[in-house]
Image 1 (cartoon, rainbow, N blue to C red):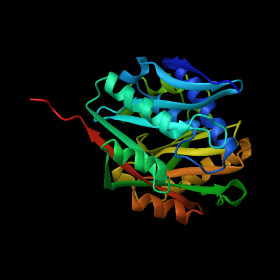
Image 2 (cartoon, helix red, strand yellow):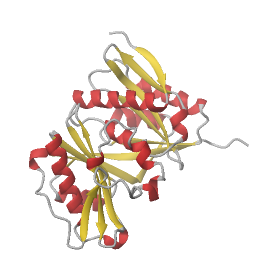
Image 3 (cartoon, one colour):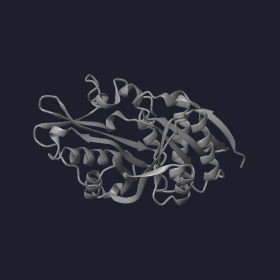
Image 4 (cartoon, helix red, strand yellow):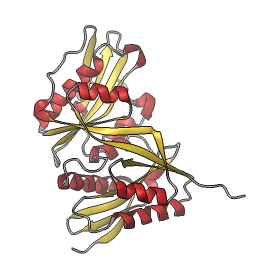
Length: 292
C-alpha cells in the first residue's frame, strides 16, 4: 500500500492526529501512551504549535504515523506515533524526522514521554542525547466498563453539574486553561458537554471538576483531567465524579475505560476504584547547548 507524506496544522492536524490514534488503538488494545482524546484535550488552550506544520505518513486508509510537536511553555513535547502492526514506516525513520523538525524549528528544550517497555524508542532517545528524568514518571490504567464501581452520590452540601446543564457560568477549567477553554473544547470532535462534570459547593464555588471523553470509534472512555481543589479534598468528591463519569461513559457505549496517573496518590486512587496499571512511562528531556 502506497504511503505519502502530508503536513497539516490547526484543526486539520487535530483531525489527522485523531484518526491516527484511533487507528492505533484499534490495532492494539493497550499499546502506546496516548488516546485520540488526549490530543484533543491538549487543544484546550492556544499554543505556538497550533500554527506549525505537523508531519503525517498516510496510506490509502488514513494516517499510519506522525511526529507530533506540542508547545508546553516550559518545553516542547515531541511524540513519534505509529499505528502498531499497521504502519510500514519504521520508528527509526519517524524519529529521524522528529530530530530534523526539532533542529529546523530551533527548539531549545524538548521532552518525550516513553513507555518503560518501549526499548527501541528509549535507545533512540539515548542516542540523540535525551536524558531520563526518573522523578517524572507516570503510567496508564485500564478497566472494563462492565466492572465499573457503583455510582456514588455527591456528599451532602455539594451538587454535581455538567456543561450540558449549566452554560451560563464561566467554565471551571478556565483558571488553569484560560478563558478560551470552553470554545476550544467545543472544536473537538470527541468533546461532549454532558461528560464535562464539576462539583459545586453550596455557595456555588467550584470544588472540583473532571472531563470524560468517549471515542465511538474505539469504544474507549477516558478520564482527563480530574481535579479536586485543595480546600475540598478527602471528602469523596473525586469518587463521586469518577463513578458518575464512568457510568455515563458506559451508557454511551464505552467498553473499556482508561485513565493516566502522574503521582502515586493518583495511581492508588484509580487502582482503588478498580482500574489496573498496564504500563509505566518516563519523561526524557533534551536541552540545546548554548554556543559561545
